[in-house]
Image (cartoon, rainbow, N blue to C red; front, side, top):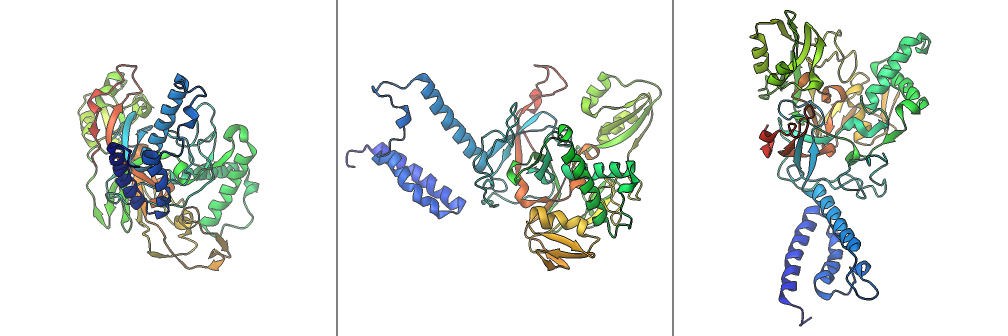
Length: 474
């Protein structure tokens, strides 16, 4: 011990401080039992950590061994960075245009809200749930850790752009992931009943909860009987569900409402994001809108729809004013779905709540520790919270609700819940269609665009140089 160089003691001291701070952050002091291994790495060197690199004749290991050693270290480092610090995320859809663009690559900070300990700790880094090409799982189901979030710099705030795991992505037909499994089973059930009225029960449904479950059961049978179309039905733990990015428009305790496309929180109209978009019905005098028109307004090909002379395009208010001023525009009008039962119904898909994409709520956001009265009508709102997110068993008998075998007239929430919307309001699959986002699904906060590629253009014209290292603002 006396012959050990000073610099090795200094390196041990630095590593020890980092290790101790990490243990305190994680909050598991059993990890201190690993300290002798750290001490051995720098000082005693009794354990031959590099045994697999040593050759019998003592020669330098081959280049393959050296590369393998570097690769293993790199993968481990990336895995730890992804868990505790940040990860990369690519914007796949236009739900946040023009705030964030399709093809933006983001650095997502895990420490902004506190990193989660993984539910599935044994997983391949850089892959969310499935290996490309082989389409096989990139993680193991065992061991499985319960939800735990480490201390972060703050909490999710209203208007934050947030990356989260898709709540309805717990059950996935492998060959058809959009729409989500629950909306898909509902739609399949409806179509089967329309084709065959004999599938309807002889007695009318006693509640929308019963109707929804009946239709979903029919839809499940369709999916299970046609693996060629839908594939195997998979279950994914929380941290292996697909990543989504949206804007948080309501936090726990808020009363959220949309009236004619305007969001209200606790009865007060909120300031809209600068680049919020809605769909507009546009009619020209016969002029065909060309690529130059779309490029000037920055409308991606995926969002270009309509048959001349009528078009259906997402626009900001500023863009709409520009279009309105064009000489060949005959009419331009924002689209709105009224809450009168005629529009496409939104969550919770119940006649008791005739909510639509543009007229929604009022709905109070569940808050940890708060209690809500339960009945057969509002059960459609809270069922997934009670069962899928908070792990209870729920049954309904004679319109009475039983939770974990006990008659229940109320429920106390264990977690906080959020409401997430896209800024491209009419082109976003968000909380209006699948409900609340639980706190254990929150991944992190985008802080920086480090690369942006326009998929509508070829390389190198596809590179959006002006978006490099762009800070993500509210």
